Image 1 (spheres, rainbow, N blue to C red):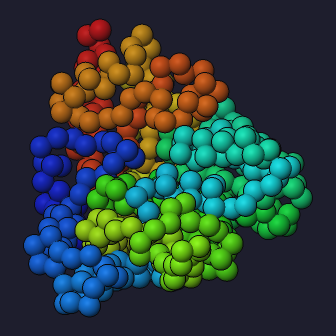
Image 2 (tube, rainbow, N blue to C red):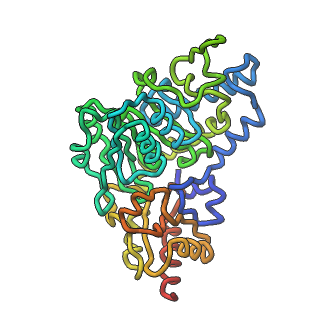
Image 3 (cartoon, rainbow, N blue to C red):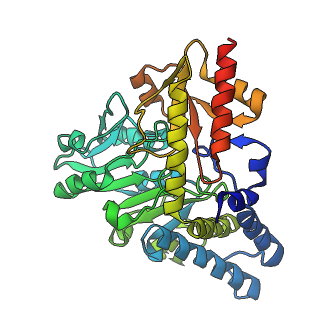
Length: 396
């Protein structure tokens, strides 16, 4: 597919310049059509009925599970559908039987969703160690060598920073974890949509990501669990659809992923997520990664020449994705974002990016302006952003 063909599938991309995909990506027509088809053609619950509509819906839902598993190099038996990456992370945090004296290792780069669930474990006597990133927002595997000891039950780390776009050396950290017998959870919310990801190559035990950041519907998330660990994890919620047997005194959950999906799931959303995976496969994740790299280089080079603009974190293109934060001297980030919107319908994120520990560590009390790119963005859009920003700042 060419960029022109891709943009035809995103009507909103023709009305605004959307540079906030790290928060939520735009949704292509084929995904919207998949969601609408469910409601129009086979709107029924799954796993509850033998009639034809329920069977069709169930088959489509299962198909999405297979697509998602293949997309990340896993097995369908290892996929648990959730309502978000946040829910997936909390499922692990609350599903492991942590004991007093256990250690969990996280980093200062984390989104609140991969920070707060672990901090809360301190109430159970769990020691939580925070490995601090460098001044440019990098984490090195050696930073974790001392933090991961024999008491460490789990390391929870982001694959890609949602603020800085920097890529974490997961495979190297995985080796350290397994040397000490620690589990590894990876927050893949910013990596899975933008680069090829294979759970076996990463060497992780849990991978969490969101559907709405990878062209899918909101209210969809994924928890991949290494198959042998499923029986060691307790579900966050229990109820209908996850039960094998119930008596007046006890209940027995269905083994495997089904026991983690109590209640009526977001059937339409999961089917839409499957369509999103189809779309990304058609485009090709290698193409997505290379396309974003070209745009990122153009953006970085352009920002370097605009007075009062300071790029936050690493200024080079190596070891990062298309997420670029910056500040403007003498202007709060929210004012910059509003200026871009009003001047040229440019949508960017501003503020703390749900990463206050990182912002405080970088001394950015007001946060940053964040530009985040995706497969539907163009060189022309990046140039409009740079031109608009340069003209506006030259007048203020």
